[in-house]
Image 1: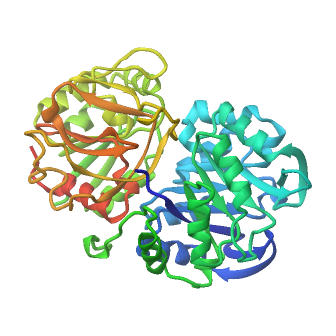
Image 2: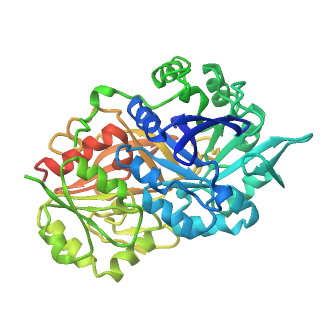
Image 3: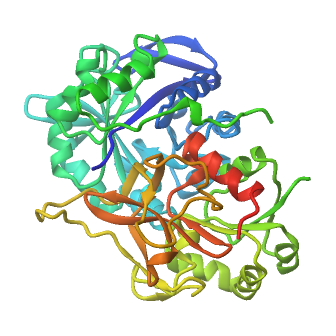
Length: 262
Length: 218
């Protein structure tokens, strides 16, 4: 049976890891590399880097940080923020990213999804969706939940899959940074509408939130930020909780590790 | 003494992590499409992400098919990763029928997109899956790239197609995705292929790469 992936999401502004609420009101936490290495050594399954000020500069500024990360960290790395063209993707992949997450540019020009997946494979093309609840359903937002697009989240997810997205990073702007749990209904609706993996993002504050989003909503992966960055739980505690609750996660044995002196 | 490893440069995929992982294992790396460099190295890695036909086109247009076939005959270790593994086979049905290198007999076909109850399953297969022995005669992990790797170790897969070797004894390790068998590692003498990404599989993956670089395989 498939394993649920535990991923750490690092929102990055300039040289710093930051954390906000509803993707805004940012607090600086420090060098993302230190966090990335810590999570890697504790057995995180994947990392997600999001350039939170990319739209301000019109490009992704994480190339150097990515290059530094892959020197020490040997797990998949997704990078998002300000990805507008096949050329942008190429630069990020060359720097060492394995996948790119695309939001704004795809909502403006959906063909970009097909262009990226044709050129680099659908496994590279993560459709990032920032979802906000409305009276009936959810709407897609961009620019950290500030700009509306008019797109319906579930319809957009279906279209994204059809155009060639290989995964969906689904962030609930309403829940993000609140520690009140994932938007279970949102994750469930999107997850059952598509056949590609869905990474649930935004809201994890307790271990029960993890089991809720897996069991009730069928998420394939969870993106954790606050809960890890503020060390509310260690990855060991999270894994142990998952295993005790019959959630299939990667077993991680630090004894099997190689020395990293080199 | 440092082992020299050539990563074959055929315009496909992101090789920075493969390179860095091999360096960490003490290898001296060359990224090359020069037949002479390939023939002079202690071992060769064929990386790759993307479509099968693009991969073959990348090899053909750089005249790399003959040098690769020559190298594998030398008995020195050769490792294909992901698409690099699939290219070793006779053929693939990804976006039409395409001829492969034919170094290991068998074909590449799509992972079925239904489970046993005819429910749709997630494709691509993305994530960590456990390696186990294949139950064939050839599945002893000793003296292979998997030496010292515990059974059920998890490694990182991302693919929509799977390798189905004609000879079951070339299957060194398998995994399972919704009860569909996925060939994880193949071996034929000195030639290895990993469907997963050892360079993205944490400490277990690094150990596999360390075996590849520093063990006397074959």
